[in-house]
Length: 67
Image (tube, rainbow, N blue to C red):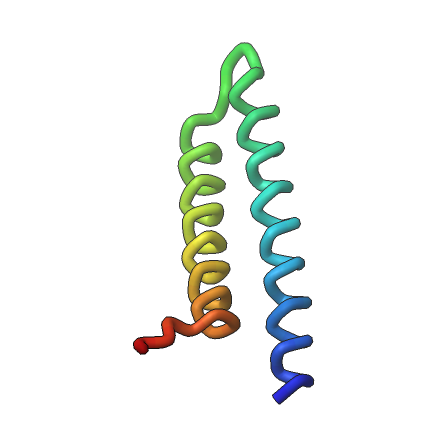
């Protein structure tokens, strides 16, 4: 069980870093004189997928406990 939690925490850390990297890339591309809107849209979709995965892992790590 503890091994699984450690693995999930490590995966969550990696996903958060990837999400931050994509955010930086979107910001950099957006600041160009002629930004590639198609590339920006693709990166934003990837960011959203990462956010969904992060939420799923967070739910596994912190399940709702109904009292």
